[in-house]
Image (cartoon, rainbow, N blue to C red):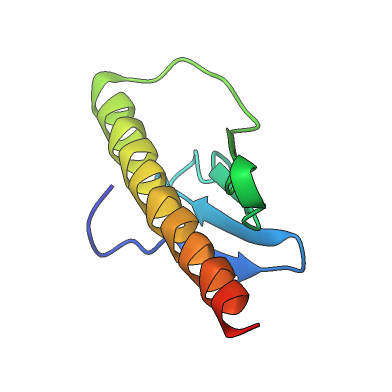
Length: 95
């Protein structure tokens, strides 16, 4: 996944959803990777679930793009997880 391809971010009451589209603009544009990061919950932290709705055979170059997109969304999920933890602990300190 090229660095110029963004990871979409949607914020909900329950947490944050990130979406990567490694094949945007190609015949495989329906293939996406989702990461859902729940709000921080005390000792449990912010749970992260990653999914992708389709499975198929990929050519080597496509597999590399998929790996890069997966790596990017995992890294961004970790960033969001830390962000949610910091926000939750900041709220507790203010009380």
